[in-house]
Structures are given as structure tokens and as C-alpha cells.
Length: 322
Length: 300
Image (cartoon, rainbow over the protein chains, first blue to last red):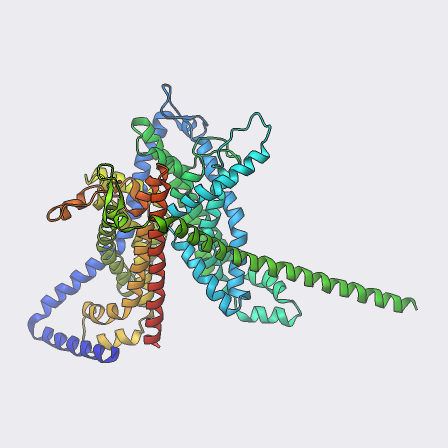
């Protein structure tokens, strides 16, 4: 059916083309030029968008730095934006984001890698047919749903653990379970699908001969996977991890409700505020310098993400080359 | 004699080494199976928990009314309408642009540098977190263009976010169209635009639709980019010209309403919305699976 339809299209195309020979040429040509220029504009739209976003983030993020000075805002740890004598140090916010992301990657990546190994190397077909759709579905679950469950299931558990660990401690501030560790655990689940699917692709791209040679030398299946296949897939796995870092760093809504939200030294059991959650929870009411400082937080976040992106670009281009 | 002892000792060691390797293998297999089991368990846990808590909340008024203290109703009708508005407007803005970009990249682009630049920009857009899109949208569409907190601001912001998705899936689909189609059309005298319109785009349609479905899934689940762009209005639009004016009014999607309910500790409503959202996610996934399977069969 497809072929017949296309045949008809061919015929019509021919008809129009021959018509264009008899005088409609300029009209057709004009349409051609128009089409090409419209497509060109569409294509460069992404470039415009990235350019505009970069410009706006810098233009809005820099004023606070200029007014307060780099040391006062980036390297000071006191964040009291609404106090009578306000101070806007975001050092702890930055450190919390870094610590939370690192912890999430540390917790999430091993599980994700093993699952990818399962899908690409080990799983019998029927089991893979269950696990793969499950991973795809995990990717589709909205982040607020993760936040809701983290808040109502994880936080109470964490609170119990906290009570046990810090019983009798006079200095510990109890957080009700909303702390850095909870946020990292939620993030660890949220980066699973990305890391799993990218590293599975990488594992599948490893040539079959490598496995065959390793097995022929007497290595077991597991030895082959861990000594041969995983090292061979390293660029792809690094890509997966970097993508995971980007996702964890940029996640806002899910962690906002499970991380507590006061600006603190990022310790596992203290309530923390991330770059993203500061934006989510304060942007609504911030004014004046506070708002500008929030845009600086946005700029820092944007800077981190751009570093991640450029890193990713480098890795991908390196992998494409030799 | 001594030789024999040595021999058996080394044999023993060999056996032990083998046993050791076996144990290691078993441990590794266990870890691998546990990890995969864990992923499935997390998903099943999430779905079951949300459904168990959410379904009791769902009744007809929940879908047909808006939350109102006066009438004593709790409902998400307004949020559902907002979600539909945002999805439609976002797609109207992003699909033509994304498809056009893919066509240019695949069919027109002659300079390698331009292609690399555009692909880098597209990759970068993919990596930018939604909260940053939200801030940009708030300042650019909301303040600079003067659209304020409105559904239109939210939709335009989201259209930047899903642009890479549409571009990439269209590009992949276009790449899969055999060159013979192009040569055939051009050889018969079709102009390039005509060839694209009548041959390439129809052939690439499955890929484009896949991209659109993925995009709809992302829009429905998005929250951070909408909080400061589309705002949190939850009322139903007036029938008539109100339907058009609604575009310029604030409107919170289901996810935004869910977030606000959580923040206000109205967990029943939150779970109700979560159950609705999960149903939508499941439905999209199923639809995508069915369509892909069908198209694969046809092309085979």
C-alpha cells in the first residue's frame, strides 16, 4: 500500500515539475528558497535558545556578585536573605549540591551498572522483558511523585534511624528524616534509568569477538564481563555516569520536599538546601537583592551543568574518533 | 616422593583457586540479579503504593469539579484542562521547529561546522535542568516579552525544553529513510521541498510521532519549569471567549497542583493526582509500545 501511495506522489511530483518548465518556474523556485530558509531558521533556533539562556542567566546572575563581591556571596556560608542585616553566602548551598550529587551517584551508579550488565549480558529473555520496561517506566514517573513517596515513606524511616543513631546526642538537630541522605537516596533512584539505558547501549556495542576470545581463554562468563566487557565499554559508561551527574544536579522538585531545606553544612543527617531547591522554594517571594542572589545561585547551577555538558561533548567526540 | 607431594599440593591449590573463582562468580551473579530485582521492586512498590493510596480518592467529582471551599469540593478539573492547554500549545510551538531543524540538518546542511554547532546546542538543551528553563522562561517570556505568569509563558518555556527530543527522533527517522527514495523523487524531477513534503516526512512519520509521544510524557510530568512560568491557577476557563483568554492566564498543571498539595500537607489530593499521573504514564508507554510494534511489522 505504501509503495502505491508513493508511486502516486512520484507521479504528482513529476506533473508539477513538468509544469514548472512551462512558466511556473519562478513561483516554484520562490517556494524552494522559502522552504530552505524556514528550515534554516528552525535549525538555528536551538543555537539561539542556548545563546539566549546563557545570556540571560549571566545578565541576571552577575549583578548580585557585583553588588556583594565574589567572596561575600560565593565563599561565605551565612545565608540569611530576609534578616534585617541580610547576608547572601551560598557556599553551603553549593557544597550541599555537590555532596548530594556525589552521594547519589555513589549509591545509584553501582546498582545501575549491575542492572545494565543484567540486561545486556546475563538476563534470560523473559526476565529482560520484565526488567527493561520497568526501567523505562521508572524514567517516565514524574519527579513530584518521587518526592511524594520520598516524603511519606523514606523520611519516616530515616527519622527512626536518626533517632537511633543520635540518641543522647546533645548537639544533633533532629530533622524528622528530611536530610541529605534522604535526598541522595531519592536521587539515586531517579538517575537509575538514565545510567542503565546508556550503559546498556555501551555494553551491547562491545564486539562479540571480545567475549568469545575471553571465554575461549577459559575465563568464566562473570570474569569476561568484569575484566573484558566493562573495560571495553568504558567511554559509554563514563557518558552514562556524567549524564547521571547532570540529572542529579538539576533535579529540583523531588528533592525539595525530602531534603529539609535549611542551609547547613552538608552532613548525611543534617537538613540541607541545594542549588535547585533554593530556587524552587524562595523564587516565589524573593525581592530585590535576594532575588538577584537567587539568580546567582541559578548561574552557579547553570555553570555546573555547562561543565557537565562540555565534558560529555568531549567524551562523545573522543569516542567517535580513533 | 617429594615430587608427588608437590604435584598434589599444586593440584590442591588449583582446585582451591577454581573454587574461589566459582564463589566469586556466584557472588557476582547474585549482585547482578539483586540489582535488576531492585529496579523492578522499586517500580512495583511505587505503582502499588500510589494506586493503593490514590484510587480511594478518585471519584467522579474529583475529575469534574475544581477545589472550592464554598462548594466543599476537592477536584482537579481545572488542572486537567490546564495540562491539555499546555501540552497542545507546547507541541504547536515545538513540533514544527523541531521537525524543521531535523530536516535542515539531514537534508540541507552542507557545512559541517554549522551542523556541529547545532548538534552541540541541541545536546546542551537536553542537559539543561528544568528549573533553569523555568527561570529563563520567567525572565524572558514573562518579563521581557510581557506575558506574565500565563499558560502561554509555560508552554513556550516547555517548547524549548522538548525541542531536542523532537529534533533527535525526527533526525533518526529521516536517517532511516533509504536514499533510493530521495534519488527516485529527485530523479523524476521533483523539487527538494516537494520531495520532503510528499516522500520524506510521510516516511518519517512513525519516528516523529514517537518523539511527540515522548514529549507529551515529559510535559505531563514536568513541574519545575512550570512553577514560575505558568503559575498555579486551578479554575476552569469560561466557555466561549474565556477559552482563548485562558492562554494568557495562569494555570497550574496536574504536577504543579500535586506539588502544592504536598506542600500544604493535603496528601489525599496529592495521592489522587499521583495515581492519575501514573495512569497517564502507563498509558503513554503502552501506546508507544503498541505503535512501535505495529510500525516495525509494517516496515518488515
